[in-house]
Amino acid sequence: MTLKLELKEVYKSFGALKVCRGISMTVDKGQMICLIGASGSGKSTLLRCINLLEEVDGGQILLDGQDITDPSLDPLPFRRRIGLVFQSFNLFPHMTVMENVMLAPRRVHKPPKAQLIAETTQLFERFGLADRMKYYPDQLSGGQQQRVAIIRALAMKPEIMLFDEVTSALDPELVGEVLDVLRQLKSEGMTMILATHEMGFAREAADKICFLDQGIIVEAGPPQQIFDAPKQDRTREFLSRVL
Amino acid sequence: MSDDTDSDITKPAAEAAGFTIAQRQEREKRLRRRANMIATFSTIAVVLAIIVLVPLAPGWEKVQRSFFNGEVFLKTFPTLVKAFMLDIAIFAWSAPIIAVWALVVALARDARSPALFPLRLFATIYNDVFRGVPVILIVYLIGFGIPGLGLPRPWNSPYIWGSVALVLSYSAYVAEVYRTGIESIHESQRSAAKSLGLSHWDTMRYVILPQAIRRVIPANMNSLISLQKDVALLSFIGPVELLRQAGVFKSLYANFTPYLGASLLFLAVTIPATRLADRMIAKQNRERS
Ligand SMILES: Nc1ncnc2c1ncn2[C@@H]1O[C@H](COP(=O)(O)OP(=O)(O)OP(=O)(O)O)[C@@H](O)[C@H]1O
Ligand SMILES: [Mg+2]
Image (cartoon, rainbow over all chains, first blue to last red):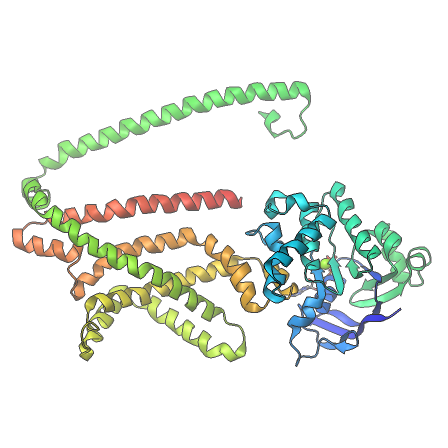
């Protein structure tokens, strides 16, 4: 197993509110990590820090051994190597979903147009949305929109994908299709970190579970250990509330 | 009536509700017809009262002669129309420049990086100054002041400097409108664009601005309508546009009717434009809810 991403003592505050209080973890290539924890425990903030949407106050985030939080480095190239998918999709409403997907590669990688279209079409086909490419986001179901958001992030050919509660805004009957996409990505070897409330999915698909509480990782380990034999009281208490 | 609020309607209830809906539609139609009738009658009554009562006023004949003089109207109106074309021309070249320049000012005010602070400072001062001084004063200061520097032709033309005054003044307002639009786009759109690795400028250009500009079109329509009227302010610094032409005729015929003609010409443009803007705003409100 090769180490892909490493967090060392990451701190992040908003004013007086300490949201990440020294978070350390490692992510191997091809692993799926699930972050679980109560609302407000800092899952989204941690993912936003990894994507460099938030500046950390302290600690390091190493991508392939390189500290990406180094303020002297341009964050753009790192952000492009790390995809982030949001709970609320955040598609651009004034573009068709195909344009949504093509915008960033077109501006950043600037491939020949024919190649870009071919690659985009391929992505839509791979996730069963080829017949929806010309639609606008508001013409699609929530599940379809979220799958487009995933495709949009994948189009940048990221090395790691971050998912922030990507099924929380969906009607229950649409959750499955998005989880299927996550399984598919995992089987294709994508390195992933998910913040999720889907405990069943986390148990079945994750390689490692990290339980976050008040800005620290209280307990981390394989799903069987966390769900069946938690060592910490706080983990046990949280699981008894959500399971 | 309680059936209407029930969300899960059983079949008999649905039939009952259907019955109520049909009844209600019938009732609403009757009410609407009644409202229309009342509106028509009251309008006719008011118009009749004006036609009958106003001429009874002691000064009416004098007023009629000096404001509603058909003969003067017919004699002056064609020339007024021609003068109005100048207003339209000034409007037509000022409006696009305002649209672009205001956007530049709005973006400058939004500049975030510390290196661009002077730009932001400039834009802020610009906005404060040009929104704080009446348009007519700007027109005077620039329209008289700059040609007064003794510039060679055509750079001493009041058309140019009058238009510049309008552009500077109106851009300050329109820039604020743009800024409201930019701020109304949810932060999550910016996050999404950033997370994809788009640069600050690309995010603005491809994600924020297209949505923001679309959202403020109705508000900007209203700015355009007042610009169309304010073009008349240039009459104070020289160009013989509609207002000045009407003034010339007023002195010539010692009669105010040309002003009435001028007003009618302005209305011919502004009323349709206002209706269009109102309709666009209503449509947008409907879409958002
Ligand atoms: N930009 C911000 N400014 C100020 N406070 C913030 C900001 N973003 C998050 N917070 C606060 O940080 C804390 C952690 O928020 P975060 O969104 O990371 O939690 P979460 O674990 O993702 O919760 P949830 O399960 O509800 O999504 C919360 O108290 C939140 O109010
Ligand atoms: Mg969250």
